[in-house]
Length: 288
Image (cartoon, rainbow, N blue to C red; front, side, top):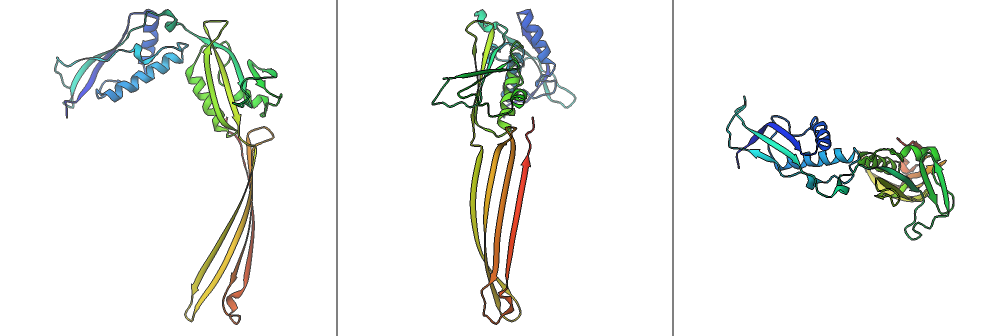
């Protein structure tokens, strides 16, 4: 096992003043705080956090390779109050020569395909504008209340590009359980090189599902005289609707019917039958 070092100071550097100011802001929540252990794991987590931070500020093409390996000086030996070896380090961002990589982007057109079928592709016949979003369908059927669909999307055309908002939108849409596949695709707008067009492809699940199940059982009850035998069975029928009233409300209903009876000698009083009938109805409302 090698020598354990913990950070004493960590400096964040970049030759570009605009990027440096953003980097300094990101440093406020650094994972490489004083007393944190020097490790490749901690450094990689911090790199990922910085990339996400820049991506959330419009710099969609800021990449991990912009951050060079950590410069740590182990030549100066010093210790903290816990007798741990301290180290001073520098995290540096080096920008590429390609200026297109450094551009700040905003959100261009946002197009939503709420009933997307990979076999049909983008052969769209109906366009509807809801808020700042363009809703594109094959038949005019959105499949979800327009206001709800709008609330699920956390970014708008004209805003600064924000990768965090895209991730949040993805999680919100998948969380309502209406769609089998969700994909948020981005590309540079053909008409504006500073804009990122976002396409949201949604493939719905089947709205309704039925299921039937059966169960058989047998048991032995022992008393002081003899064994008593019983048998029984049950049948259940279930129905689920994943998108009630086009509001992403999940409704499930189950009916269970059962019977239990004795299989002993006719003279035994334990041969009686019992019947059971249960109904279970549930509504689950989406958390937006």
